[in-house]
Structures are given as C-alpha cells and as structure tokens.
Length: 381
Image 1: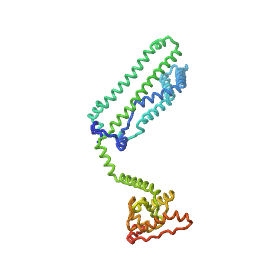
Image 2 (image 1 turned 30 degrees about the horizontal axis):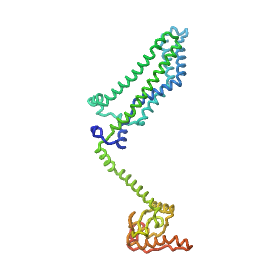
Image 3 (image 1 turned 135 degrees about the horizontal axis):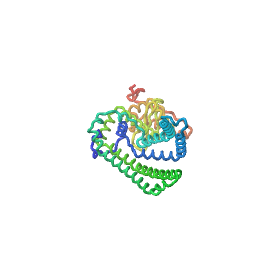
Image 4 (image 1 turned 120 degrees about the horizontal axis):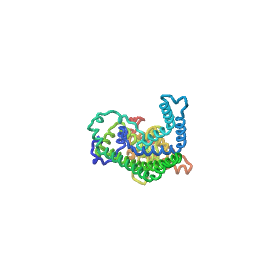
C-alpha cells in the first residue's frame, strides 16, 4: 500500500485515481483554523448587525423575569420557574446565531477539500482499536506537529489578549467609578475591539494553515515511481479502460481523417454505404492516395465534409467498394486499380474546362478487375 512506503521514496505527484481513492477513504485536506476563523467572522458580523436587537430583547426578558407578583412571593419553586422561563426564551432569541454558526462551520469545513462523507472513515477497524496504534497516533510526528500548532495558536491569542488587558488597564479601573449605563457601553467597546483583533489573529493563523495543510496532504498522497507504474498497468488492464482508449483513438483518427477530406481531389461513393476520398498530385510520380474512407455514418460525414469544401463526388459503387476493402488510409491504391481510378481523376480534372465551354462531361464507368469486385459485406463477387 502507498501508506506503507517510506516518505523519502515518494517523489511522484499523486494521480487522479490515488486522490479519488483517498477521498473514498475519507482523506481530504482540511483546516480546522479556517473553520474557527470563519465562525468568528460570521458571529461578529451577526452580532454587529443584530446586536442591538438581541441585547434589547434580552434586557427586556431579564427585566420582566424578575418582576414578581404579590401572590407569587410564597411559591416554593418560583426561582426555578423564573430561571427556566428566562433560559427558554433566551435560547429562542439566540437560535438564529446558532443556526448561522452551524452552517458557516459546515461551509468552512467544505471550502477546503469539498463536502465528503465516506463510510470507510467511520467503519470500525481492528487497527483503530489496537492500543499500540493508538499510542503511535498520540505520540507520532503528526500529533507532535498538531500539538505544537495548538500551543503556538494559544500563545499568540493569549499574547494579544494580555496586550489588550494591559492597554485597557486604566479604562478597566475607571469602570468601577462610572454609572452602570456608561460602564456597560465602555466595557462593550473594549470587548468588541479585543474580539475584533483576536478574530484578525485567527484569520492570519488560518491564512498560514490552509496552504500548509494543502502541502502536507499532497505530501502524504505522493507515490513512488513503482506505485505509479503499477497503477498504470492496473488501469490499462481493465477491459472497460481498454475499450475507452480504443474508442478515443478511433475518434481521434476519424477526426484527423475528416480534416484531410478538404484537400482531396475526389470522393468516390456507393452512394450511401461507402465513401473513399483520394488525393493525386500530377507533378509527382506517385499513385493516388486514400486519405479518408468510411462506411455508413462515417461515409455520410465524408460526403458532407466534401460538399462543404467543394470536393467533387463521383458515384461508382464497384470502385468505391474495391478501394474501401483493399486500401488503408494514407496508402496508395493497388496497381490493378490504377486505370479505373485514372479515368475518374481525368474526369474530375476535365470538369473545369468542360463547364467553362458550356459542355457536359460523361461520367466514367471503369471496368473493375474481377478479383477487386466485392459486395457490401466485403465478400468477393
């Protein structure tokens, strides 16, 4: 398995199949710091937009909650009832904030690596229950790195908080001598500013952690040269993959063939089932060359391509079948068919002058050698 290979041997970038298999196993790049930063930003934004409404409703709720009617003074469970009602109403007030936080946490988690639910990741495995493997996970290099990151993050946030407490020390002392309303306003401003700076710190941490996690994930997914070769052999050996490759090769070959039709001198047809396109250079000593041929829908494509580019089409079924069944693409025609094809090419070359003089040229009807006569199935006639 790739996981059993030493890290220093993994020099090749992960293939698409390797990444897909890792995804099926629940292995995708994730950044916890991105989720924390996103939740903090969304929570602060929500409090900024609806903070006045929320605080006002909570203040009214607590004020009304501590108003007691005379007949309720001697009730034994009055305190429990009052606090239960306040707690229930408070919960309903903060539900929008909780829902927002929940969805932001999910979206932030899927922002890196996408949404992924893998049954394999939650399926019980004997290796996960092995105490030795548990100790390896707890005290391994990865756990040490995560612990170091957590300590650094905690230290950085604590340092920011300590700085603000020190910076606001005079204001904090002055709060005790202020009236309750201005004291609450001043305390809220200090808490808001401190929270803003802490959030900015968490965003900075996330900005560092996201590329780091992507790099670490890619490093874990790397493969050895042998693994890449084995995977390629495995993929190539699958019947469906072989069929797909052959289909792609046919499509590419057919596309290249169609691109050559526009340069053909003539297309000989059958007229529906067979089409053969020929190129002939009278200045060379070579024989005509078949640049495209096809049957049924491919033949139709050849005829349409020829029509689009003004290539002459001549309907001679016996010759079309003879060329189709005896000559491969980009090969010269058989010597036995030289005379028959020469008549067709002479006819094509004479069309321009014949039309210019207002005359009509008779279509050739060349004789096909007996050994080159085939039916539509390719059987000798």
